[in-house]
Every structure is written in C-alpha cells, then in structure tokens.
Length: 313
Image (cartoon, rainbow, N blue to C red; front, top):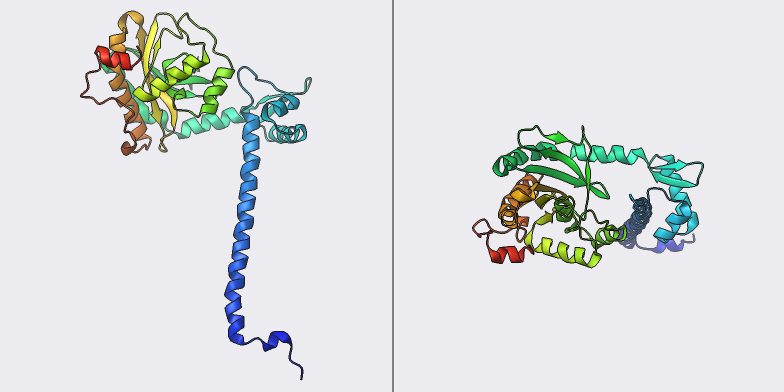
C-alpha cells in the first residue's frame, strides 16, 4: 500500500502546525479588518470634508465647486453629494445644480445639544454668576460659523433659551467667540479668517494676523474680552467651557455697558468667570486635574497694572 506524503507527517508535527495556521488566519483577519476600518475612516473623512465646505459665506455650492474646494475628483464629489442628498444631509435646488445643508443636520445638532445637558448643568452656575456681577450672562455654543446663545440671564429676568429664541453672534468679534476660537484647531481658525472678518465697530479686529495674536494671548491667560468690538457701548469678559474629554465647545461671558465695565472691572471679573466656566465643565465630566495653567489663581490680585498688561488690555 502506498502512503500519501501527508500521511507520512508525524501526528505531532500536524498538531504543531495547526496553531500556527490559526495564528496566521487570525493575523490575516485582523489585517483585513484594519484595512476595512481604514477605508471606512477615509470615506467618512471625505464626507465630512464635503459638509465642511458649506458656510454662511457659501451656503449653496455646486458639485464642481465642492470638488474645487476639497480637491476631490469631480466624480467623487458628485457621488458623495448625491448620497448625502438621498439621506437628507444635503438639499438640492433643482433649478440650479446647487446644494445646501439639509434640515437633518439641524435636527441632529439640536439632539446633540439636548443630550449634552448643558443647560441643566449650567443654569445654577449662571444664576450665581449673574447675582454676583449684576450684569448680563451669556452661555453660547458654536454652530459651525457663529456662537449661538444657549442661555441668557439678565437682572430680574428668567433664563432665556435658544429653544424659544435663537440668537447668534460672530465668533471673531465677541468674548464668547474668541474664548471658544482660541482653543480650536488651526484649520477652523484659518477658515474663520478666510470667510472674512467684517468690521462691526471701529474696534473690531479685521486683520487675520492681529486675530491670531489675540487668540494666543487668550490661550495664555485663560479668558477673552470684547472691548466694544461687536457692539458699541457693550463690553464683556468670557471663558471657555470644556466637555468631559477636555474639548472646548462652549463659552460663558459677563457683559454690560462700557460705563460699568472699564478695564479694571473686566480684569477683576476674569477669575470669577473662569471659575464659573470650570465649575460647569466639571459638572459635564471634565476632570479637575486637567485644569492646570488655564486660570489665574484666586490669591493673585487681578486688578493691577501688571495683570492688565499681561491681559493685553
């Protein structure tokens, strides 16, 4: 009887080769999964790049314009746009081959805000800050282009929410906007500058280089000021709010008439505003151990010339 080559391999050798084959199979499977994951990430990145093309300056775009802005091949851009239209993330103007962001994105954004529990965690802190300062308090989040008021408290009034009244303010000319923008990726800052820094008052920063320098100062001191840059006779001081991962996604400010908010008071209020922002961030899950370097110590005397100079005021 002839013996096949396989039957001549000792049983012990076959047993040793089996785990090796399993290991190779598992390795190949893991590699395929990594490749699939990488491919999915690349696809999602392209989708996000397309969505980020839209702005207040460019609310409607053609697939050709999207291709030019993203660097994607025109066929790829058209395919992504068509897919986003089919699921409601983009809406098409059929008379012109243009697209705009769809209401589905607004619905999802509203859901994110509602699930964030920002208002629930912030209201008590806002009320306390309003009582301490006697001025108007604004709590804002970034909507992709502007700072949107989530809550506002004035002296003797109930909290006002964007659920009942939607207001927005430019990100580059307000205290809350600059407190947010200072801690964002360079790409978003550059995009804000590229979209145009429109002069709202004689004090508005309209030069990109000057805005970058201002944001650097804000990062160093931990708070921003608006010295009648968005509206004449209104000044404010603001601080960033962080989520549980430490990402700055909102800001809180104290604002009032210029006559009641001179430089000394703006700087004097800064530690209290920062402390309130930290308290809200902590309630949202931000670890207190991550706070180093973001706020002046309470035992420092903020109302003096050296601090005012450091604040750039």
